[in-house]
Length: 448
Image (tube, rainbow, N blue to C red; front, side, top):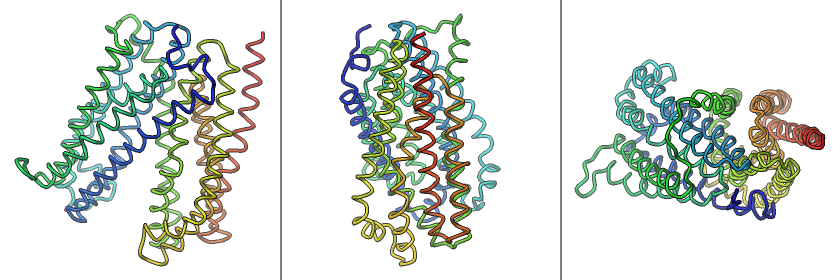
């Protein structure tokens, strides 16, 4: 096959860098999308912001479906392209998009019928239900528009092209940023729709991303084909084999975050506020690593498809070493910035002090966390999704949470922060050792 983006033949550091940089900009676009939404909704008042805050776990859960399908698509399409089977890749991409749309439509239908009992269960006050209805009624009806660009972008990345998905994400962010104030506050000829306007603005931005993604898949990458009923269920099984554990792995992160929040709640409101602010800072500090994991999957998948495990593992270990070095540099830069950053996110001295302690301790371990992230991405690309899920589970529930709990018992809240760091270091170290053993197994198998 034609190696358009150099995944099979180009310099490994160069290829991974050229794929990761655009992906990082795409991640920034998604981050800004969420920040813009939150900012404009906050101008409507505390009730509106609280109503939308209650929707976050629900919207994340539905998006986990698409993220899982995206992982299943990226891994399988990458391997097919590495084998030179471009027609099979196009068929597989089409079947994957159909599956993603069907699953999300089903989830949306259930969601529409259960808005009130679900959000009351999540702790929302009955007075907030009308606002939640205004937002979620629109969101559930239009979320299928987001499925195709999310899953479609995963298929595009499987070819090695990360620039186009980044541009599509930026386009969506731009449309949302323009429409949010117009539809929320009713400027000019636009109606004043309040919180409902935010949901409609998101829907229009998703539609723009959908059109861009479909155009690239159909016209440029030739990754859409007529469905084949004979192979439809087989392809769906292949996607779900990787996509289901991947979706569950994504769901583990907010679950562990909720458990950490429960631990912190016993230390007072300031501790909870500090941790919430720390999570926003963390999402920025590990942005490059998150981008690298997304690019590593198609790189490994294509090279495994081309029967080149040595190159696949070279990319994996290069990414792991980069995680350690890059995040160490970020941590060193964070030391002098920790005090002004803490002041930026809170005016209360107790919250600032706790956030400062967090930023001095936990970011040191992000490189080790990155090692684990690369391992999970690599295992999915190697078609070992259950192993990937096991390592995701172990990182959070065998290393991070127990160490955080033990630290909190020994040294109060500062000990909890140290425990999070120790858990990351422990998980990353064991993950690296496991990757060494995995490489040995694959290379020995390839030599036989």
